[in-house]
Image (cartoon, rainbow, N blue to C red; front, top):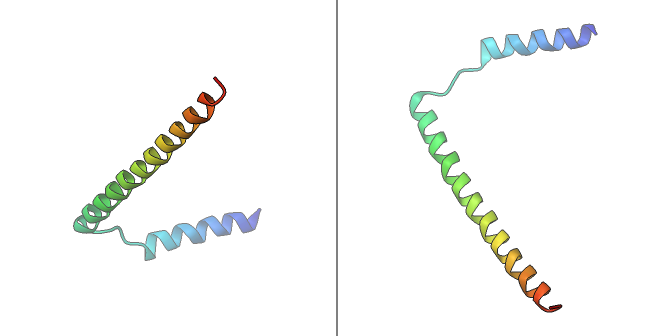
Length: 64
């Protein structure tokens, strides 16, 4: 149990002393980057879903 408490204390100290938040311009550019990749990823998923849906339609129409 002491190891866990020590771990959290050391983690908190490291965050407090060694980690700096990004600047406003870094935050803006990273936000834009995340938004662009989210849009690209969602379009890829949409495309795969559309293709899979069409494949399933063809497959089930074979047994009509």
